[in-house]
Amino acid sequence: QVQLVESGGGLVQPGGSLRLSCVSSGSRHRFNTMGWYRQAPGKERELVADINSSRITNYADSAKGRFTISRDVIKNTVYLQMNSLKPEDTAVYFCHAVLSIAGNTANYWGQGTQVTVST
Image 1 (spheres, rainbow, N blue to C red):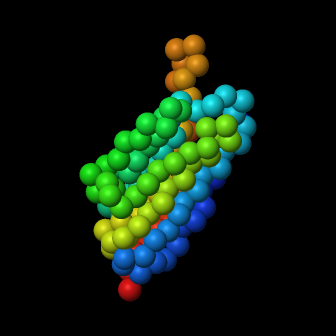
Image 2: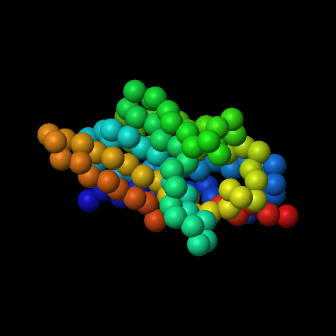
């Protein structure tokens, strides 16, 4: 059974930094894409950034220039370095992974880690 476990969330002041990590287990295959989504109270879940197995990255406009996504393809882990954090970055951050094999695609989600940006 595939599991994704996030860590690294917490409370940080505006302008501060956090590094999120997502460790996977249970998959014998490399994920095609791994990424981070977030969901703020009363809002829909939205993509923050993702990265494929060739390390090609994709960022939401709100993350460009401040966040950096990276992954260890062999270990099936993904990281999100978040700098210059703003109060509007406050949300639960979810790790996401996509595995496509022989035409079948599966999506996996972590439980989420809370990020709060506040004074």
